[in-house]
Length: 386
Ligand SMILES: Cc1ncc(COP(=O)(O)O)c(C=O)c1O
Image (cartoon, rainbow, N blue to C red):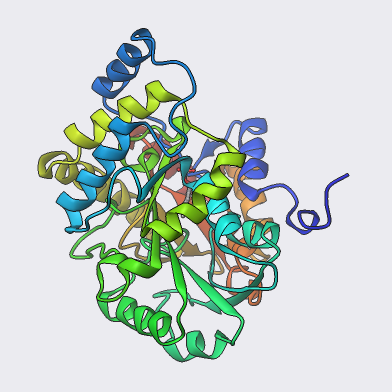
């Protein structure tokens, strides 16, 4: 019964690996959700909002309190000004943001540039919009952007570039030089950009997240998506948003009104509280320090277990080459690791379309887990060397 548009995409690899992890009682380093709670004050704010009677349909473009908090945080963090009532829309997570933005902005036959490895909902949503993806491959281990390849992928039909930075699954943070190159390409070819920045606060060492919308000439052609799930460790609440120039927000809203219409008001109010109270320097410093410790621990474990790792500069994922440990492809390795050694991870060849061989020797681990969970995984990973 599945439509021709969706048939090629099957079940997401995340559902498959999480299912296998549960079946084999494996430590789940596959799906990117924390196994710890976010700040209790945010839960308190949600409970208070639930009790206050704000429980009917919210304003479709977003609860006034939340859109104001989003606009204020963009101004404070990046110096970007958005009109809270006209240039912000609240989605049911960035996932809905991706779908509604692509459905609202694209016409059938438009071409869309996707960088591979990609977040798996991009090709599916491009297909739902009747548009055509064109892929530019980023290669292990540094995933540097080849601007010539990007330019070659652009045709007269190209309408939009999807840019994800910090980048899942590679952990790459696009550099200022790369972003400037993408921006020039977009301006010269009159393209629009959908910038998925859900990991905006997850950067390590000296890597700095630079919103592409902040580059000259880009604010008017960029719809930026972000989400509270990663920053506040409430992935299940699914509160995300888009910011951009009014014509782009109107386009995304044109789809959003028919996709979800609106998002749960008490959770929006609580996230407004979170954005106002928990994006100060102190909170973000602690957040980054804790994630840096988790990353460094996992990198050491993977290195001593015999993997070759791509050191992530952002996100909570690490891609590792397992060829010194196992003779087989990424799906076989991920299955073996889960069923024989009790650690679940993601085989990333599913995140490539034109060069899946790039992903066949790699596996993705998520380190958004308690140190205790990572230590238990470390014991198991320490035993896999042949
Ligand atoms: C790159 C990227 N975009 C979007 C999302 C989805 O965000 P949300 O949970 O807010 O729907 C994720 C979640 O893993 C992601 O990694």
